[in-house]
Image (cartoon, rainbow, N blue to C red):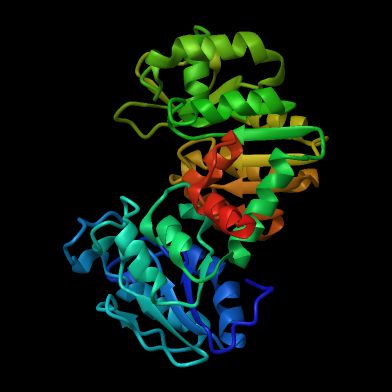
Length: 382
């Protein structure tokens, strides 16, 4: 996008403005702030700007006020310092003045969005002279507003946010500075099994946390009490540990609490009681993990170490964040929960790059083709 003269051009830009809404207001505007540089540049270029985004998972073909982008339009207007009209009926064309911006109502209200409908893609393409794909967070889905529109628009290109995301992740995947560490927390090994298998083939150190670490620990015979774990994946966890155990670090002490009680105790991993749940990593593990990250040149982090939403169990995730930024490594953080955590700790600006993507972030690291990126490459090559 930055290479094009867009003055007076109708520019349809796909952003990911899918923010949490509470009491009719945007509760976290991180994704809006991530899109600001692109939108500000388009305004400076005096383009006629049409922004398209989704919000949540409404039923297609049905308008639902609960999923309206109205709060997003209002917050985006405050951040940009300009009025951002929300347009609900645009299917038969829309007029936007040069140097102005409008936001289309939730694209998922339209039948065919999630099925990558060709007709909806052509309708969107008919609104513009240039389509800008800037929503890396949705690039792993072939949908009408991320894929079909790019096939039929007069011109299609990548936006600055998407370019920054791809370049940051390519520094990890294609030519990382070694040694490389990956920190993978979260609830379920099953949801990140492909990612962890690929990372273990490539990185020098892997630190699992949260429920993922529990599944590895349970597979190795450690008592977990009532902790979150996935016994159905113990065989895969044992096989991975048998093959790559020399490059994995698992917790040696954990923070636990009895079920139905608020008492907090730190225990060695072999001393967890039957009625207790693991909620965080202990101080010894925090210190050991931090020391292991000191010599790393590249670190990628996705997923908290424990239930950081509760202050009593936020210490492990905070210690990991501090260890990563103190390492001096090129650091990339991805995933909504992880970004929420580092912002809460006041450390967000100290990371090299914060990816607003979730599923696309993980699929890129796994080496999968992202349709929203591949279609731009195809257009560029044709």
